[in-house]
Length: 178
Length: 394
Image 1 (cartoon, chains in turn cyan, yellow):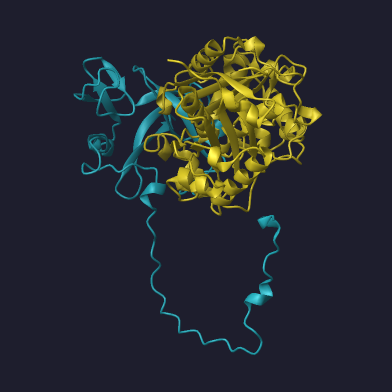
Image 2 (tube, rainbow over the protein chains, first blue to last red):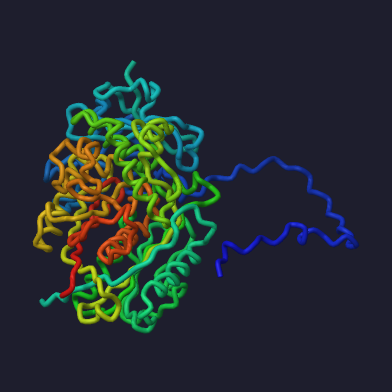
């Protein structure tokens, strides 16, 4: 038997029989201010930033000061992205914080014109890209603000900036140079 | 250590598409189909069970899915039961695990299944689920999902090699045409001529809708057995001759070149080396065309096309029947849809059907001996390759 081919129950059978009386509905409660539901953490991509949640909280503190930083392994002279707590090469756990250069150039870009994740639907269309930072061997992925996607070009200079996401947390993105 | 020969002796898939069925119902459906497809199969013969499922916690809010699926399919595995998760390659991962278990002697008869339910009332929630395949804390907040990543691959390929939108559309046209001969494909009844593909809306520039595989519900299952049992189930076993896998990064910042997928070259070398064949001996390939540009890069990484010439290879019909190697005769992810965990298993089902000459003429590969299956996962950061041989003896 194909379950899907089974006809749906006719809607009419769900209505009260003609001779039944519909019970009186209780009075509606007085309207109150709408409660704005907080997005569940596990459907919100922004990380938890505080020291009770992550050993990388210094990254987010530095973001609030306007600077994107990362970790570096002094033993391997290796700049690591994203910031880490252990070096992937020597596995040492003594890493140091360094500020990243703010300026970079677009290596590749595209845009999200539809199919955005939950909470980002209102931001469509938005541009994203891979940016080579000036003077360091790092190519970071991020949102690109400042120009619409169809006015961006490969090689275009952009700057890293930090921004308040609105609930006390901060994140980073790129902005085209004017 | 002695490694035993392993045969894939049959398989089944559900209809792929937007299905009015739950995750559990898809598992029941593919189980029923598997037992219909292999009448000699008895549930008590199945000692091990491997379930490829990428995101059941997200799409179905269900964990502990291997025993859940085994119950749906009426199986009581008593040696190994486990789930394999490798995003878009979860299904092939299940087959590889079953292969390893049988080759080592831990299992004699194993079922490998892939199940994915992706279409939900909230498309935004489904898109969030897809986005957490990436590095959710560092790439996710920017809005990283598969389309913009593969769009950047396409942009760089166009810049570095002059690949065109028309060449990408040639891939999509071919795979959709093959899907028109596959009733289980999501787009079985839809025609996508090249001029129509080039007019579809842009999803992530330069990728249009027809360059992207879709969100799909579906399940697929295969039966793998030790060599001495193969003839109980089929006259046309597909022998697993080689496998390879490579993972070289995860965060997008560590991708390196977008157009040179070194991980795929490594995985292919390993698989070909184990099989003892070269790329030129492959009669047909089921490769991971999650996007048209993926198939173009794959032509190059497998060595069928010269570096940078994958677009021209597509436009010249070299991946079509009569070309250098038949690529995605099942219809590919573009034509069949891409239920993450089910895809890799459905590709293996196609290998067995081609070897058994059980496919319509429009997609039949003439006298195939060697077949290759490839899945990438995530942002093409992991590659999984398997090589199958048709034939009589083990």
